[in-house]
Length: 78
Image (cartoon, rainbow, N blue to C red; front, side):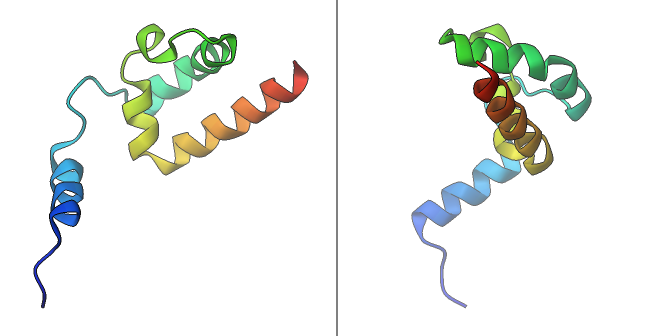
């Protein structure tokens, strides 16, 4: 077995340690997703408006899919 590359090792550590800041649960993500997408599409700082959402969406494929779908839907309606 070969040694992991430095980037691979960093990815593994990041996955084990989680994000450096706050992170929402799936339930909290669902509660705040509408607001987060609205703020994103307005051009304002969505990460400041809903702290922890970005980190959660990066680590949760199910919530990221909900985000992408809602983002596309709202954007198409504007």
